Image 1 (cartoon, rainbow, N blue to C red):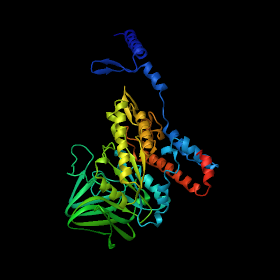
Image 2: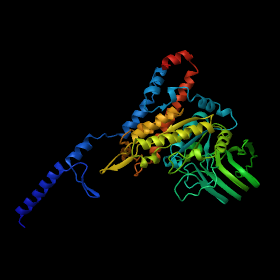
Image 3: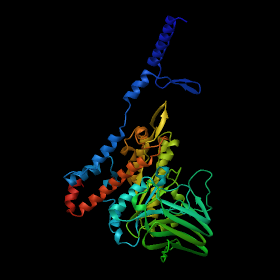
Image 4: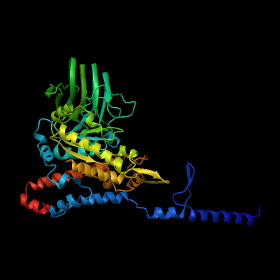
Length: 477
């Protein structure tokens, strides 16, 4: 073939490609079960006009919104009513969290820690988000250790290491069809129960993970929450040569919290069990201060709690001094959302869960955290899952209507189409599934949540120094 012919052929190919680029539909051409796609001018224009989220700018804006102004009352009024990073409170009642703050302020004087329970789906696995909140609260109010965790777990923690031997069998009420269920509903505060038969040994050690926070690197108190003991049940704890005396607290329903306090902070402990019992949880924390339990329920949409024994939950939350319950759910329900009707059905289920926690822990406040942005491939582009913004707004309305606070993670991270940019960030703030945060991204989320919560505490402290009328006038109520 002559050079002239080759040039004409190539020119013709480029012309045809150019015509295709100018005329091809941005969403492709359906051909039976498949869709034919081609780079197009329409697609280029759409991508150019699409909202782009600059993650660093978003996080810088979050940082700036937490910066205090000289007029503190004006700052708090603006924060509580206009700041998208705020915790939304039922009825805009800025005193809603005051009972939690009073308990935390008195935590150093109490005989046991003030407990914050953080339930969530796999977004909080490996102690993500919870660990940042725990560290921030313990720096402010005192405390140490990881908090409560199950005696056995399929998912490791970045904050505590444990190994078990003997007659332990785990039953969980969440997970896929391979999960072993119990023949009863006594799952307890971990949404699982470990049945002990004959005895066993549980060894605890602080984590050596690089992501473990400073305050989890030692503990001075170990507790076991259990029920239905038989067969001469007993349990003892040691750490090296330290052999503390156990202190037991029992509920009217038969649930027992047995605690050992060590004379100095330790990094490991061994629990030796004899007999039979249902083990609902084990904790490693400080003698006082604040602790945060990380309870990830992989695959769970947060609608299972009403199936747990109500008397058992009431006993447990009363014994371990739970003052704040955080529920972080919604993401696992998104794959089944098709329309507003399915969102309304989920709203009804979440409403029942919030009401359930009001019943089993009447002394505690409830904070609901909705789903983050989630990325999905649509016509070759990563965009926000359909109906996700509607889901977020619906969950916020449900929480506030049922006397629970709400924190909007979706908008804190940038809103629509932000997850794709969190994945592309260097270092990555989210994983390639466009759903889960990396440890670095989870740290950004945990820091924002902590700062929002502590902003309310700072205002609580300020209000104690000012006349009530002045505060009410400044806040417009």
